[in-house]
Figure (spheres, rainbow, N blue to C red):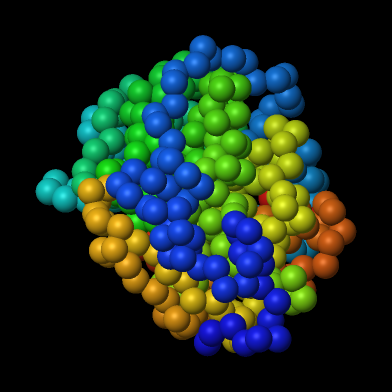
Length: 423
């Protein structure tokens, strides 16, 4: 449905109700290479690596306090943490006898695609590391180390068609999180893990955010930017490189692509406390995925003392409320969303498309992304998030990779938020 006059709408760009991205782009004379916030950013100059400020470890999606809370609540048999633990234990990837199958070259998209061999191993490493922290069972810590070492000593290349950027983003940030959970174990080759991520994953993250695979700036959906941003941030924290952390956070606030906060939530409805998600006219599976990726980004930044959650008057919360409300079966306002697709050489008047209504495709899809959002805004900050709360309750207890489908979409989130984020 289109927005009715009674819905106050704020554009991400200047606050004018009738302004669409198409109108703005036309007004600034979009030519090849001109992005939504002006000229497309050139490839960032390589800055000297700087050390991330000293912080408690682990410091990505989970802190020592998060893990201690999960451990203590599970030991006490308290709910819903125990239900979250039971889901972890029941997942086939969390078993200590998991055998990795590392590859030298991972291909996502195109001929020879083999990336389905990668993501179960990442989730097995993460899940075993999580079981080690919560239970203290050494077999699981050793299993996580063994899986990660197998990959860091083997993998050199991530490639494929355009989907290689998705692989580098999603699996880059997930790899880093698994590695962070076991970084202090003596049986983990931390240096090799950092080298693998910096050499095989990070260059693709950087290339995509700078060049967007040679496409016009609005061509790629928010998730493409978001996974690249999450990977750059996670690798930066794992490798103790402040330059990467700063660049990822700067892109969150100011990036020209659809993953930056203003472009991922292009229209805000202040009276309703909602913000339209960029992929809402596409389908709901990808909008929920976007909530998971932005939530992961904000959580990792928060654990470094950087508040992206609260940016622009908690704008991400408004986006999450919008997606949750619609996927719970309720109506939401919708403003026509117009974008251009095609290569950078596309003429300004070619390749324009418009979503005129929100998509019901995949509506109500369950993904393990909501406990993280609820845990921050309500658990930490004491803010009201009624639709996110209802959605989290509908999914609780959250599982993880392998619990939401056998294809790669079922592994887009690390999951287990009830165990780790519930407050």
